[in-house]
Image (cartoon, rainbow, N blue to C red):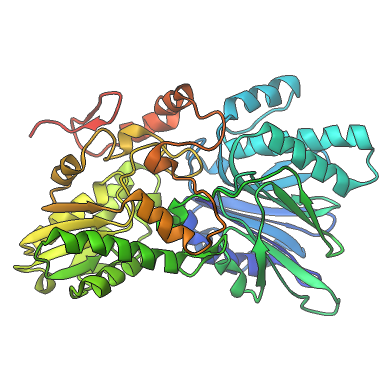
Amino acid sequence: MCGILGIANRNEDVFAEIYDGLLMLQHRGQDASGVVTYTGGFFRERKANGLVKDVFQPSDAETLTGRVGMGHVRYPTAGSLSASEAQPFFVNAPYGIYLVHNGNITNTEAQREKVTGKYSRHLRTTSDSEILLNVLADKVADAIKVNGSADAIRNIFAGVKMTMERVQGAYSVICLIAGVGMLAFRDPHGIRPLSVAKRDAIGDKEGADYAFASEDVAFGINGFDKLRDVKPGEAILVDLDGNLHEFQAVEGKLTPCIFEYVYLARPDSVLDGVSVYQSQIRMGKTLAKQIAESGLEIDAVIPVPDSARPVALEVSNVTGIRYREALVKNRYVGRTFIMPGQAERQKSVRRKLNAIPREMEGRNILLVDDSIVRGNTIKKIVQMCREAGAKKVYIASASPPVAHPNVYGIDMPTKHELIANGRSVDEIRIELGADALFYQELDDLVWAAKEGNPTIAQFDCSCFDGNYITGSVTPEYLADLESSNRVSQKIEEAPTPGASWNGERLVEPAS
């Protein structure tokens, strides 16, 4: 997750458009927001913990001036929860580079040792994004030594190439480079999304304005038309004269994260040629087949709002079971999955949803959710439905069991947090308090995404099948994640009194 956005205008200051674009990406992170603009002489920066609307005020338009700028919405997957780790990050040499990053680096420690040892750089945070920035700066500096300083674009592209050869993991990146322009690049597997867009320049100067974003929903609000997705292993640079330069840094193979289509991306986004909404409709179609074959008597299909709604609607359409909006969402509470800290996530469930008893009393209901990760939210929803009078409560998940850590930028990095880890489907059902539990088959999920773009040969499904497509994800690496400081913090925040960690998962106290 995390959302990144960059805009290079020919004529007008860019802050207002970055603000509007970040609002469209707010679903990708609620922990912190940051913006940096460039005047051609100086950078202007503001970042802090909080939502976009809370971090920035109308008066910021007077200070965040410049025709080129970029922004970031964050939730933490690596590093700490501190406001000091809000992005963008900055290094002053070479050139002066700001960076925003979506993803997660998997060979972080090896790169940290090189950056702080061989290159004698000082890191201010524990963030993998700051390490990535310093690696890029090192490699651009190396290119300058070899090529000379006359051709900045050549040196930057050479630096990106060397960075990709050295860094492993998932990274979609946008940079502002003093005296040069805006740079965007995507890892050789294209795990996290990144797109480029264009519009005719607004104002006196002829030419084009360009934008980069995690999802194309950030383009339309500012009048940009999507050109294409950034290719895996590709770098694109928009110079300060508004010219677009493209460079295939390393050979890439598109392997996008399939969880983007299940939950992370907005339904009105199109990622790597695949409509998120249409893929979710297909998920509903295959899930409906399982439900119909079960022979269960079901009175109503009820989505867990909002992201499960397209799947639930198609389940209803295919099975003929009536669709009901029987869970009402409080629009002023954020998505619990991405709220930092387990205690905050659990407290938010009751703030976030309320059941309608008249739609549940005496009925057998099917709750449709996009996924079941930790299980805390859906467990409380099942309890809420029973309190509202439901006779039987069944659950259907649009995705397969999440049984493995995700190491590519989603906040589910450790096994002990995953309800499917070490449990059978029936054991999960019992844990959730449901009368029946359906999971999407992985083959069906891959079909639902691939049908939108048959040229995609493979998806990253690591949180479902445990197959990691990049290097450095060894058993030792996963063990280190389990014992990391941030994991320890999450364990300490576990809301159930008396719960303990047995090395694999949280064990609830005996009732």
